[in-house]
Length: 470
Image (cartoon, rainbow, N blue to C red):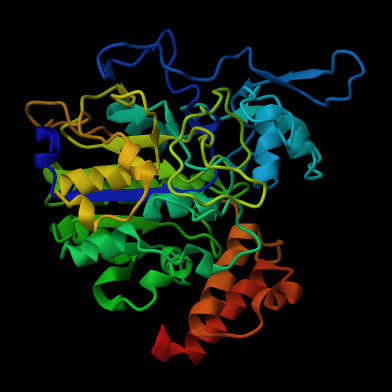
């Protein structure tokens, strides 16, 4: 185990939803304001941000040169994009290759985001080409600039939320590439939380919703674990961080449905900024700040733009394949990964120290090495076994004493009306609860679910009726 990790007693992960690296952080640094440090130190730079020359065609009509729409530095507001972009496996293929069924080995052209977003019926498809500036996301940007950000961190699957969160917790999606149709029994395998439980290491999942932990809903092998210390509200995390009573590993969930602050388009980024500020304040002001590593990331890109082609060569975690034959041998689109600790130099950009790039399974690999978990106790995943860890990140000889000034991002986030149609992830939340509580009906339950309110009502009704099982 590397010496840097020996300084850490607590690892905290906040995972948000469905935004790419370039969409949120592509303009974080520039030639006029470059990063101060790179890890590894060789080779260095430049920061792999969004080039202003990046563009997408409006169509692939074959009728000569199609109109190109260039990327825009600066989003019109904090709810861009205003529609939920497409994010299923076939849609991501279109975004990456300009073809929903690309031949094996084709190099991603990254030119199908605009066309894919236009298929949603959005009134202004060109808004998908807008990226946020650091001034528009002051909390995210201040944390990245004052600590470290990885500009080569990839989602584990070129697709949706549930499979990528499965890789984050299981090291595999067991052959699943899409959120829908959803069956939680598709993810019936030991999680990193089960491993920690077996090794008698403390852990907890904290959620900021009125509903229930989505991680627990997704993972059947978490259903029967005692709720008390393991599944709590975010308020408990904030208090535990301040008092210095956090478990070894904390996983934080935003609100995904009611008053959402998860960053999922078109949910307001202001709400996500306010959530990040609350978490940062609790950790940095807590009793164990010097021994805590806070990681802020997103599960997948959610259809938003990125210019960097995801590489091939990902280690298939197991022998599962999806129905199309996809072998899980290429990564998903880049997402931000921000690492925060007083042992990290300000202005750091980090990359993998090996030939294998970072993906979500690197967090599992880091937990394994940090806690010295024997390989025999780990879940079986070739992706985890190949993943680089964060061992080289905590590079300072002494912890920093300075804390960046970071005012609370004031304002009221735009309300996401519960009369809106639910997204695939939200439908999966309902199905997860139905399975766990033994509610019959399967996918037929969703036939009359046309609004998010229907899902909120389902949670309220069945949580009250089945209180003894919750």
